[in-house]
Amino acid sequence: MSLAASLDNSILIAGLDEVGRGCIVGPVIAAAVILHPDKPIAGLTDSKKLSENKRRDLAEKIKTSAVCWAVGRAEVSEIDTINILQATLVAMQRAFSMLEPAPTFAKVDGNRLPILPCPAQAIVQGDLLVAEISAASILAKVARDEEMLTLDRLYPGYHFAVHKGYPTQQHLAALQQHGVTPQHRRSFAPVRKILLGSI
Image (cartoon, rainbow, N blue to C red; front, side, top):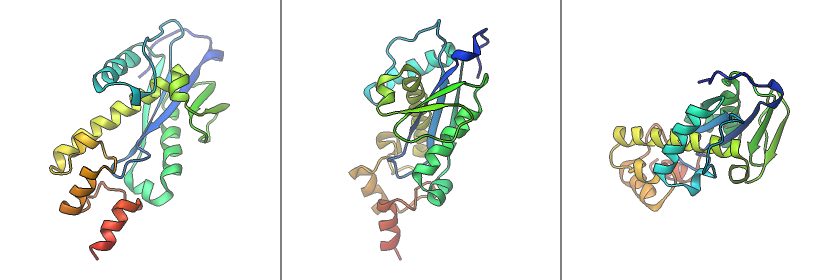
C-alpha cells in the first residue's frame, strides 16, 4: 500500500481516525494515512459531511496519491471483550503498524491516543480540521460501508446497507423481528436488551 517516494523522514505525519464506534453490529475500523506533501487532494473533510459517491471518489484519490495508507480493525468479539474504546485504540494501532515507511508523528481524531511508537497528538474534530485525519476518516468509512454491504447480503432483512449498523428504528425493528446475528455487539445495550428479553 506504499507509494514509492523519496521524502525526508522527518516530515512523515500520519493521520488516524476510526468509524463504527456508535454502531451495534460489525467491527470498528480505523485507517492511517500519510499524505504526500507534493500531491494535495482537494475536498478532504470529515467523511460524514460527504456523499457516498464523493467519499468513494476521494478514497481512490487518497490510495493513489498518499505516501502510504492502511486499514485496521477490531472484531465484534474483541469489542465485547475489551469494550469499544479499547477496541478502537487497538484498531488504530493495527492500522498504524502497517504503514511503510513508518511515520515520525501521528495526529489522531478525538481526545484519546492509542499507544504508538512515535509522538502523537489527539485533536478534537480532527477529521474536519486536519487533512491527514480527514483522509483516514474517508478510508475508514468507505471500508466499513463496504463491510455493511457484505453483511446486507449475508443477512437479508436487517437493512445493513441502509443504516450501516447504527441503531436506527429500522435496525432495532429488524432485531426484534429476526433476532440477534453473530455479527451484533452483544455488550451494547440495544442488543443486550433483546437478548435478555429472549431468555
